[in-house]
View 1 (cartoon, helix red, strand yellow):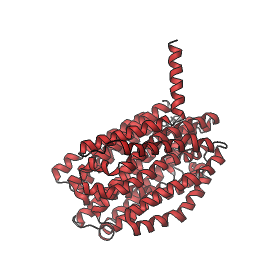
View 2: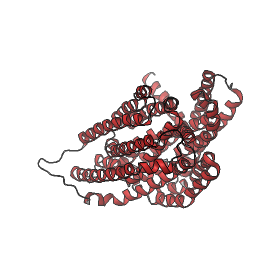
View 3: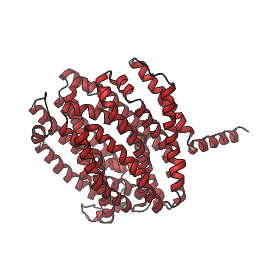
View 4: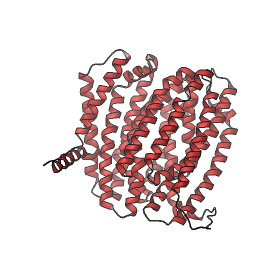
Length: 504
């Protein structure tokens, strides 16, 4: 399967999953109430914190699978690594899920600010969350095997099916049972069991065969060669969880559960910008690792730059559109003027921050492919010391908007101050072209188009009119950002040349 096909499959799948999640939110709020949806937002945050227990093993699984297919390791060594990882995942899932299950009562009584739901309802919902999170986390191991094997078309289709069950098929349950959180999470538990069963079976069909009669025992020894890489990934993942979830954790304590639900809604819409890079990273990282294993350095940099520009075009367009049209978009989507007014400032900040982050992630892909994460480790150590206290202080003093300003500022600072260091180490001579041609010019063009579109396009009044004007705004910004991309013009010239070659 080609890289382009894998990326297209990822985009279609993640677009479907993201759109479903966003479109369904007003219905969840309607049927479950603000506090019920606040529990759903809290559930998402708990999943992110639980990922800290991964200790870098899921990315290691994907990378070693890609290296196996690139010929860097043999089949028996790979099977031994898979067996070692499975044992660790089972132990951590049982232990981590058990602790969350046992602590559900304390969380519901002493942490969450609940006004309408009963304590027993909240406790039961939290216990169900613990089991679901453990199962979904186990799925990460098998997703790593499927991703590393570059079976992303299958994975995208399957993820879309699971998303349909998770987001749409739950609505009749909420409607018949009155939107009780426990009913919602019982259903989600059933979906998690199905997801785990199918993913694990698929991963096993992709594992290489070993000689008949060969027994693959469980042992930690296969992890030793990749332990340094895994632990570095673990630290990076821990810092990432701290950075992206500290504001949500602090605000879950400070805000009433209903207001926390509205905050979660705004952040989720803003996270849609990351959909522009997620599908690319899922396909690009194993391909870059494989190219590195095969010694294709020039081709690796070409692929790296080409997809940086692509993500810059769509991330800039999405971030600028959400920033300029935050309140009209929320009003058109929910029909709730009060919600739109209060959530719009949060959405603007997180959308812009995520737009910068989408392209700032590319040097991480380069380090991942090289298997050298030392610079990333140092950068994240600095973030722990500086950024986490800033998020806590800003969230306590200024609430969700303060956390949003820190998020935007951190991403801009990282883009300017940290990325040159990475390129100087792994791709000397690339910085000037990457910062101008591949990223900054595209973002500046999108920003200028946003200002012009705001001045000349009609604002709209009704929900349909607001949605249509926002769509028109997005189309204008996307076209301008695409026209500022040298990659787009090279692709167009190549297409014209191919057409002329076929039709002289």
